[in-house]
Length: 89
Image 1 (tube, rainbow, N blue to C red):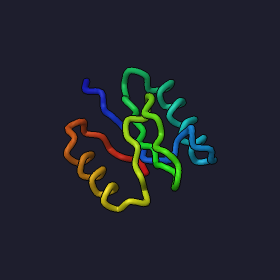
Image 2: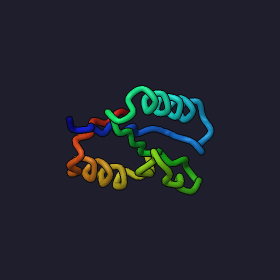
Image 3: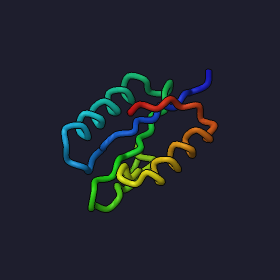
Image 4: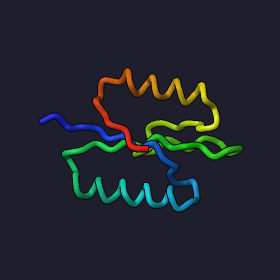
């Protein structure tokens, strides 16, 4: 059976906000419940005026949501990737 990859595009710690904390809790719970059957990755949304997130597992991408060209490049990179990963925003 092929292990699928699920990509979350969300704010994520070390960013301090409720959505980032919720996303981290959700990723941890899904990793616990689907271990070995689902690979989870995170595309962390950058905060305005702050440096990009460090790319530590499960963060595989960092995206500046205030730069439309970067968002388009990111979307194209994901669409061209052969991992067959649905994305959740």
